[in-house]
Every structure is written in structure tokens, then in C-alpha cells.
Length: 245
Image 1 (cartoon, rainbow, N blue to C red):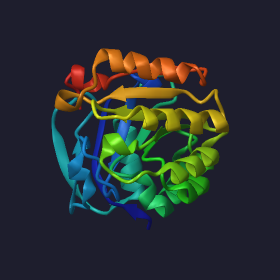
Image 2: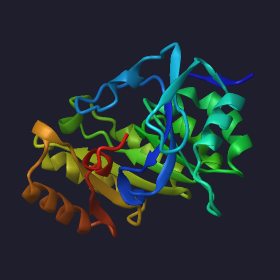
Image 3: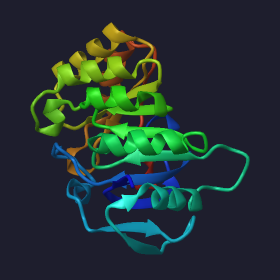
């Protein structure tokens, strides 16, 4: 039976990007192959023996199940946390990096996609895995890992190939920016997107706390983007402001 390593399963509002405020069921996959200095989910870097599951929608209580979690158990948990009503619920695959468990996703998503809208949050590096799960994904939230913000090596070629693999889905690019983010990184991000499809939205997401850029820098970055792209927005992490999970 297919199974996956999951950190937690919970219901909350989407706190990032153009879908901010919409209700999602979040499945936080364990495991990540990079370490961004602004990461706000370091617990998801490793695979734990326990997965935390919200008891019921809007509850503050959790229970625990064993990892790896079977596809049937994961589906039951997700459906139990989906809001009632006529809409087709959103399921957010987050992490960690969900695409590191690509084989599980291909098997699982092929079964559940008729019941749920699938929203993938990813580092935008694993382009081959994206090609394999592409048909099962509705929306792709693709990070651009700017080296002056992450403290890591550049991933420009990986991002280029990933974005090319995502075209045709509802895809947007999210770039976390800090006080240390270089104009050259922003310019290269904008140029890469515009050369593939200038209608792909770019979300500039300011880091919080001591890493936060100034409002003037954010406006300057947005203006640079709008010279080449049709849709550039500055959107902070709303769930932190609302103190939601």
C-alpha cells in the first residue's frame, strides 16, 4: 500500500500568494533537501515517526498517527478536515518538499483529484518530478530561491526548467526577499520569468523580523518587475499576522 512521511495535517487559511485567505487542508510532507536561512518550518526537514493530525475542523487539538501514513488514511484525514458546502475543497501539499515523495503523489493524487483541488507548494527545483505529477496539480506555488536571500547557491537553471514544466497549470512564482536581497537577483528572477511567459504572476514576499526589507525596497522591486511582467504583487505572510497555523 502506498504511504508517505507526513509532518502534520491541519485546516487553516492560505497565508501566502494570490490565494491568500482561502480555506485549505494542509498536508505538510516531511523532508527537505535545502536549508534556506529564513525557513519557518525547520521541523519538516526530517522524517519523524509521528504525524500530528488536527482532530476536527477549527479545533485546536491534535492526535498522533504513525509514519509512514497510508494513502487511505491520509485521504480520510483530509476529507475530515474539509469545510462543508458546495465548493470543491482545496488541498495544499506543502513541506518540507512534497516532490521528494513524487512516487506517492502520482499514485495518491490520481485517485483523489476528482474530489479536491490540488495546490502544490514547492521550492521549484525538482523539474523532473513536476513533469510526472503535473497532470494531477491544479495550482503551482513555485518558489524562486534568490541566493542573496536564502544564503544558498543559485538554482537558476533548475527554476527555468521547473517553470517550463509548469506552464499550462495555474502557476505563479513566489520570491521571498530580505534586507540583503540584491537587485541583481531580483532582475534575474524577473528576466527568467518574462522570457518564458510574462503573464506568470510574481509574488514578492517580504521576510519578517530582523530579515525584513524596507517598504521602499519592496516598492522598488515591484516597479522593476512591472516593467517586464503583467502581474507583480507584494504580499506578506498573512497567517502570521492573524496568528493562524
